[in-house]
Image 1 (tube, helix red, strand yellow):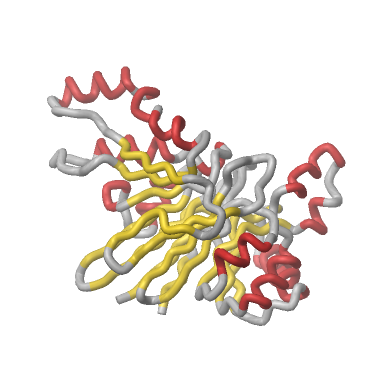
Image 2 (image 1 turned 30 degrees about the vertical axis):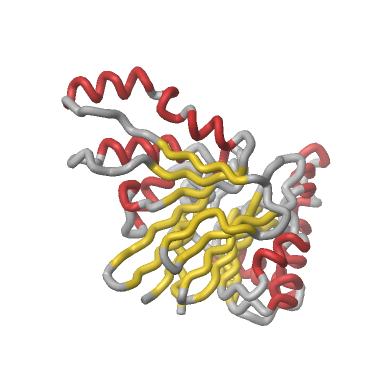
Length: 287
């Protein structure tokens, strides 16, 4: 029995050649069965899934944190590639779980956006149906609330602070191997602390505020709704989280020295656990 957390994308809206858009794959293996849960689907997610040893057709559910485009643009590819690769035509609709709000009409419109392409492909390949999505909307939770369960694995959603984007949530994945918390995009806030209490692995978006304060003033608005590396360190230490994984890295590291500066920031906040500055396909396994 094991649970693996793989970062499918560490990037941001600003593209770099080596970082896919935001995403986290949580895989739980038990008694010969495997659960694959994907959290957000930024650009190039399908390629990273394959690199992680998974495929769109293996996904048991996709969970969305909020409706910023960099977290969603890969979902079309996930859906369409899942269908194209389904040679036996036996896959169920793609389950997508998201907070009630703009994510839901986006998800429910996926197939319609590609209707002309799907009509041609279906007729040419003599396929009896096109792809489909099963969307599940949940109310913005006052406290972390269960939104999905399969056997002894459950997923809870909780509030985060990414205003003016609303709703925005993070997720807590509880398995027999331990607990994984995923911040989504957020400020460091009490809401994340509640979501991550008792977590074995905390996946946190990370921005070096000290660097962003040096950019032209008209670009500093991103300080309003992202997580400062120093404050992340202080919060993770207070929570006693043993492993901290940094992703959605701003500014994107280009070398080992850049990555170590992220580590230094977190350490300056007081964190004494394991720090992982993620690259695409970085993975951590529980227990």
